[in-house]
Amino acid sequence: MENKTLSASVKALDKATSDVKAFLESIVDDESFVETDVFLTGKSFDSADEALGEGVVTGYATMGGNPVHIFAQNSGVLKGSLSDAHANKIYKCMQRAIKSGTPLISIIDSCGARVGEGASIMEGYAKLIAGSFDLADEVPHICIVKGTAVGMMATFVAGADFVFMSKDAIMSVNSPMYLVSDAKSFPVDYKAQLGYKAYEGESDMAQFVYSDAKDLAKQLQKLTSTLLSDEGEPGDDPNRVDPKLEKTTSAKERTALVCDKNSVIEYCPTYAKEVVCSLAKLNGISVGVVATEGDYISEKGIEKAASFIEKLEAYNIPLITLVDSLGVNSTLKEEIGGFAKKTNALMKTIALSTIPKIGVAVGNAVGYAYSALMSKSIGFDYTLATSNAVVAPIGMDVSKVIATDQIKELKKKVKEASEKSDIDANALEKAMKYFEKVMANLEIKGKSVEEAYAEMQSNPLVAAKDGYIDNVIEATNLRPYLSSALLMVLGI
Image 1 (cartoon, rainbow, N blue to C red):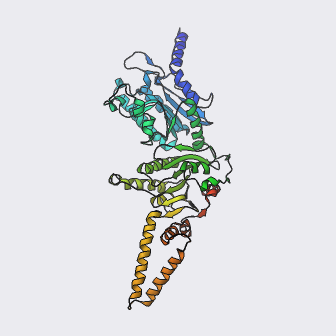
Image 2 (spheres, rainbow, N blue to C red; image 1 turned 180 degrees about the vertical axis):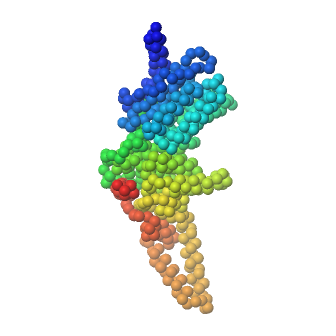
Image 3 (cartoon, rainbow, N blue to C red; image 1 turned 45 degrees about the vertical axis):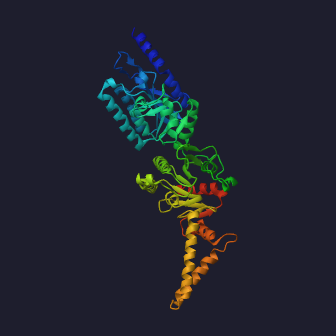
């Protein structure tokens, strides 16, 4: 009789968890998942029936050969709602990950709390979120929003290092019904209001999106390989040169051409598009690349770069910047809202980071873009500039105006000095020699004095002569130089 009872319980549990286990097993290595706390259960507050598996499956597995601990909320049992027992089961999985030093993969699909349990639910949420802070200091945390993440589970998601969101998922701290209660049409399309499409251009909350389990598995394998795998064979010639680098102005294309083939994983691809952040391999070594394009870096772009670099620091992944930007150009509203604090925060993140840093001027490296993203003084270990780069405190258009004013002023002073009989002869001679020297340097065929002056001041060789840039190279040779520089700064 007891065996029949046990058999019935096992069958009921298997049936209740079959869908979530199938999903879980599809994203880890074949036959690698081992379940833990299989029979841990609680009670539904409004039913005498057991919450089979407590609405969550926990265990460990391998992903791309790397060991991971993993939990998956089960929306098929009481809609994945969180109880005290549910929270404790997840917390045990998190602690195992910390103890073994292995990454945590969390799969979120929960309608919220089993409110009938009262204060214990609030304690359960607090335990999970406090536990996520412990994770952040010890092991990587990759979170997958599979279905619904509402209430404090959305807060839990926000603490993960990297977040994948299903195209069909929704996420909000407040109740979706409350947030869209003033909707003019019903039924409400919560996915449109609170799904990935709603988040992608507005924040870096979800860095990656997936369409199905197969797509997710492929992306996870690539990410974990970059984050967790030791240095290996590059699989691509580190000395490969590419003439396309002489012409391209796309940050995405430039990143792909510089890094190992098929190794680039873009972070928040549709958010703050002027700052392209990518995880990749260079000469078989994991790197993080921040590449800028367009005229100016936006407020969102500054925040995106800072968040990404913080993650590189946590994983001890070297930073490479490919700088092509005129700096920042804030609005009055942004200035009053604390724009200076955000620009300061990015520079502080870079200055305090201990990871190796290589900066490259590939186009405009002007003002804040140069200071924050490649200067020696902020902490970059090695710096390069391509021969067509512009390294200057201001942009070419502005510098032309200033050059014109400076030259006019110089001409005026020399003329005034020559008309005064009481002028110091030595001072006049020095002024004339300086003027002649400047004019001689500006005699570049086919260009106005103002254009030539502006180009002379922004030439990367000027910065190189002052020791701020280690080398000026042809863009086509960028990959070989970066491959070599990376080995140098890593001491390999």
